[in-house]
Amino acid sequence: MQSCHGVGKSFLAATMAAWWVDTHDPSETMVVTTAPSLDQVHAILWEEIRGIHSRAGLPGVVQRTDRWLVGDRLVGMGRKPPDHSESAFQGMHRKYVLVILDEACGIPEWLWTAVETITTADTCRILAIGNPDDPNSHFKHVCEHSRATAWESYKISAFDSPNFTDEEVPDDLRQLLTTKTWVEDRKKEWGEDNPLYVAKVLGEFPSDHPWSVVRLTDVYSCRLEQVRSKEELVPVELGIDVGGGGDETIIRERRGMKAGREWRETSDLPERISRMALHAINATGATSVKVDSNGIGFGVVGELRNLKELGHHEARVYGVNVSEKARRPDQYYNLRSQLWWDCGRLAAEQRAFDLSEIENADATVAQLLEPRYEFDLKGRIKVEPKDDIRKRLGRSPDNADALLLAYFQPIAFATEWFEHLTMQRAA
Image (cartoon, rainbow, N blue to C red; front, side):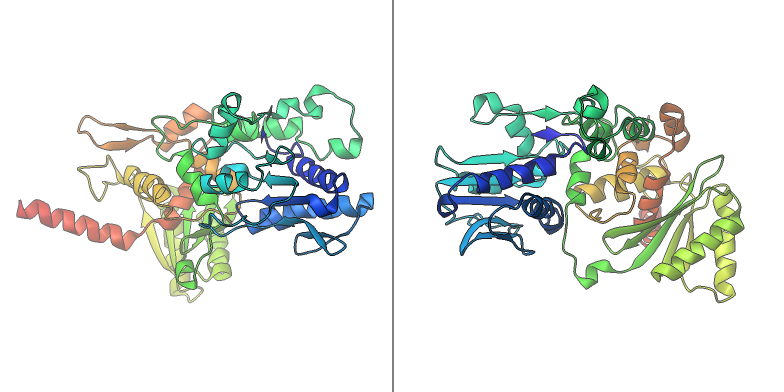
């Protein structure tokens, strides 16, 4: 079942799990649930199962370890299997097996195969649910080829919700479902053509625009839960996209590969923005700050450097003028183009940044997917200017720009520029 955001698919799956256990002989029954991350297993689906079990007075006990016991018989379990283990579900053969694949876009193909090996009886079933986020997932293949297989496929959009169809439902339930206000806000913030709107509102699998700088498929992989070592969580750095003319100033934290917190300010006063930046530096322990130095940003760079001289922080402060020449001017139209390509497209392709715990995730990802690129008369990559994006969409990708600045490496870019000049002179 491919579904939009907020129509109760996890509750539906939990209800089905409870019904399955309640209506079958415990000695012949098993419910197995899995999802890409432990939080999705424990804090979402099994939390719903625990609630239903308690309210309905169902048999047995549902443990906090996501195991359901009836007497001494295990009848249900939730688990996130290892990333690569085709034997993850071997040995779970019962007459009545129900497998629930939650957030099915993130379930690898080998796990679908493993699940099918324990549901070979005619009395077994598999339920796969999720937002259709990844157009390259096996979930999409199953949904779109259901007529040629044993699967039944269903699609639910926000406009199928009772809040849009005016079906009679209890008021307390209606308040939990996707609202018209939420959909309208997403339409304004993301736009109807944005892949996030297509997936989370329409409940359809989106496709990448052929000229998108950053591609949805790559970003989706970066949003999956990833375990990071301590070495991968340093250095701590900040990217600051300074707003002007009504745009917000956005500060984005990154800890090594992992993107984190965000601070926002609507003021265009350098001294006020620098105070917010100082707060973010002190809160994160950042050792480096990269500031968009165009316009008002030039003043912010100066304020932050003055604050450092006065002993208020120890972070290095870099001004980044994205309208300047690229460090590889034979390949990129300007520094903005190189920034978006290297720190956006290539980093997403290589999963060089981790968006699994990023604050304000959907808005930032939606903006990452907006800019287009073209080739100029010299064959160089030219990323759509910010002003052109604002004219086309009526909004600016400030959150995305701050994210890319957080991952930008000024010293590496400077070294690359020096090497380019040296090669030119030698030629």
